[in-house]
Length: 378
Image (cartoon, rainbow, N blue to C red; front, top):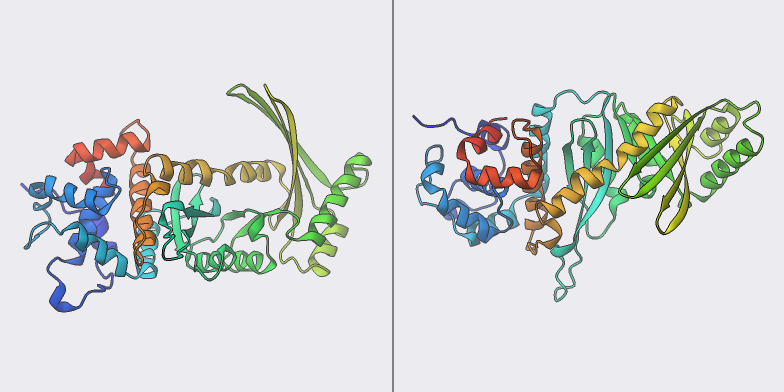
């Protein structure tokens, strides 16, 4: 009895445009994609790895793939993914995420960029590729990804990503680079709220908010609406105390909304972090703009949660998938391989049957065909 076909891939990627001319199509695009996804989940990090995986698992792959001309060569995988339209590939990835996670309301969604450091080409004066992705804090899934145009920067890529995400009812967080009035409006237009880190890239707003909090603390918040929360963590030989404040002071908000044109502004926030280690004490203060109410517990959870994209996605991609070491770079292949990794990461993260980290789950998927089929059928 044949195992079930991996319907997740077949359903959501079946209409992916094939970049090849008809006479060169010895291998079906969906077969190439399916082998690549299976291989990357199972530990492959290059086109050579994917071909080797295909030959090693050919008998099993034939239980649900026709493979009339056998396993494609690594050159075939490389050529196809170099020419594959990354926008179309990312759109199918997004469609699949919507299917497995149809309800995102209430999620904290962190958006951040990542440089694929190994994708540069010094001889061709090619800078490494950057991608911007969205990360759901509670479900710990990658919600979407777009590549950054080499002639532009992350600021222009974020609105393109926001446009395709299902964000209604979400709370979107971004670092200070993306603290822009246009980005704030784009988030509101998607039915979401924002928490934007504020630094001196917005000097007038930053100085206004900094002065407001400084004066409020000096006067012990006399006559100023605010909420406060303190948390303390002790781990890995360090003690960290965080103090959170939010304020809905109407005079400040009116000024920031009208004079400085921040849309939908409902509150401002401040966080001070004091850390004690063997090397001494450090202190850092950060400021934020919020389009949601000034509930300080929600603000604290959101600010802490933003860095989940670093620990839960970027770090895992570098450690478990060796993304920064990858030298894949021809055509669109770096961006498309990044999508393959994020497909694999989501499938591995969704599984709760194996109590192990992502790297160990990749090993199990490479060894255990029944487990891999279970992942693919999610």
